[in-house]
Image (cartoon, rainbow, N blue to C red):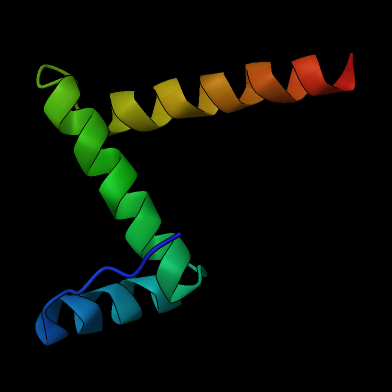
Length: 67
């Protein structure tokens, strides 16, 4: 784990979004980084497609953990 230096205005955006989305500031920043990384890797997918793909992946992983 490491530290990431970000601009103060971006930190404020993360803080506001984390409150609305009921996530910690770190969880919100991690969500945005993960979605951004996936969007760059899959430029033809819409945000909702990326979220749905991640939900399916998490569901499959949870089912594997239960078995």
